Length: 203
Image 1 (cartoon, rainbow, N blue to C red):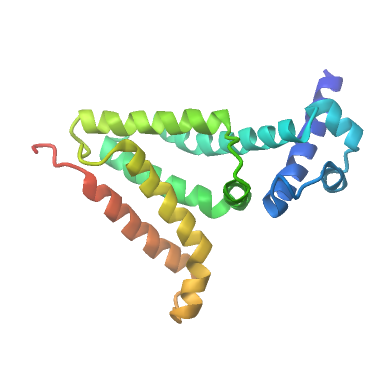
Image 2 (image 1 turned 30 degrees about the vertical axis):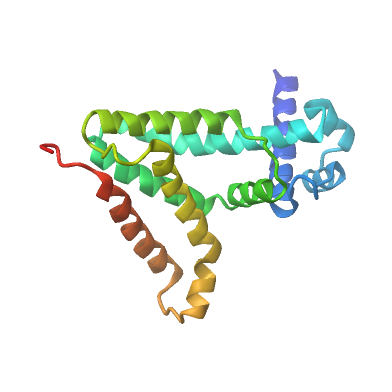
């Protein structure tokens, strides 16, 4: 039991360090030597647990995507009506990307490096969300005029853009509001735009 716990502790330290380095330098710019230095775990032990840098990268993606899935699956047990569930889900996604800086950066690096690697957990989550959108459409809560893939893109794209360029907007446009107030303003109007696709129940 102790051996298993030690192995889990070692893997956790490696994944913590690898996540920070991949976020800062991307896959191509990251070396196992840097991960070793950051995590305090030898390269040999890293290879023992993860075999290759590619495998380590995939494990990092899986761990982060699990955190993402946990945020949304936690809403499933609230038994909220679909319109309220949609609003809470949009807020939860926004809050996740507001705090999960490494996932945002790793995603951007992945795009820049033209890496096709995707986490299986994230793929399952995306497919599940698309099915949820379809169910809302079938049940008459959401307009069928918008494709589920487009609807999901309209969630993630603006959020990423906001966090990437918010400070630049604030500087150029001389905004005086504090960061938290700007986030709340964005979130309020973001939710209003996406829920405009809702249908009245008697439509």
